[in-house]
Length: 153
Image 1 (spheres, rainbow, N blue to C red):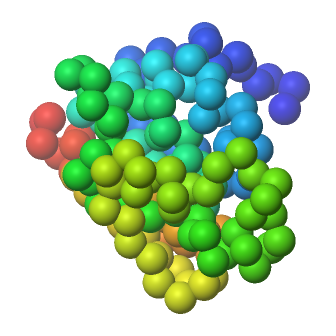
Image 2 (image 1 turned 90 degrees about the vertical axis):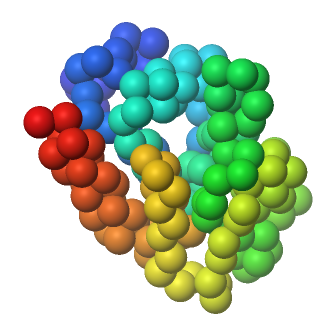
């Protein structure tokens, strides 16, 4: 933590991918942060993979394509489900429900049983349903990075 850099100092040109872990925090800060939104949009514009797990897919709520449409519109995604949020008793606490928000934006939301391991890959977008999906999502993200590098070589 002593060497943590500010989000506004990150340039996608210096990285092969970006990965957003979950936890409830991103729903309040990263989902609304213009630097976070810009960063994800820059990775997408550069055709670099983006990975998000659990609550983190909620940070895509203000991310747009160059034409202004929601980034997730028509994309297959997953994230923390409404049922999982209810199970932890925070439905009325969080600023929005990840599942509802992504569906509202036009995403094709996929889920498995509560707490099941589930990862969805849509092109260079990798999303995981819950904390148990973190390893699988990270592996899928690294496979996407490898594929991009292989095609660029």
